[in-house]
Image 1: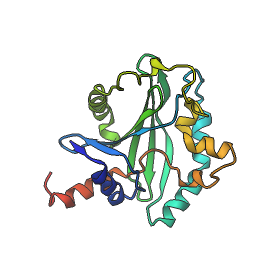
Image 2: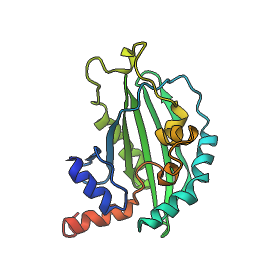
Image 3: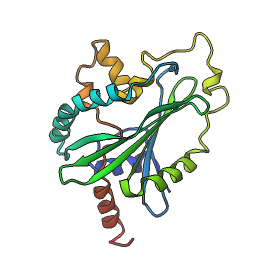
Image 4: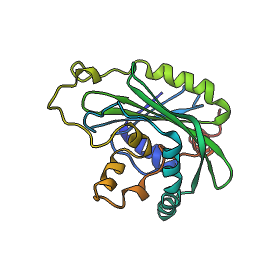
Length: 220
């Protein structure tokens, strides 16, 4: 199933996420999982950096209080990081950077955000899968199958990078920890960006199920 960018903004609002202009949604036919996708014009990202999952998680955890303060200001519920469901790793063949995070909300509802970054010549496609931990393995397989048809236009694949192309100021680790926000803070600009940042799509799965039940009048 698919939602265009206008529908995706409404879905994000109803599930207590900040708007993300340009993002679209794909979902399983039975609505057991959904994923938010967006192209990001980052510039070319070097993929030769080692990834320290423990250090990255610590930086995310250090940002948790500020992130929840911002969510509170917006009237959203708090979310808390519990660890990796899948540690960050990069595939040199597919040019996919992937990681999974376990989270819970204030009511103890557990969820998993599984994130991919598919690198291209001048940018990347960011995708975040939101699913129930109990169904994670099966839903991840379905999500990967859905994403297997993703391709860049001719001339825009990662391998078609040419000297002189615009490059990003950060690498793989910063993509996991925060991407462009990490670069902005490092450079001294945009000091408020990190408090706006939270891991992937911060959607409690139980809240999403409740939203769909209301939308469809309680039917499955």
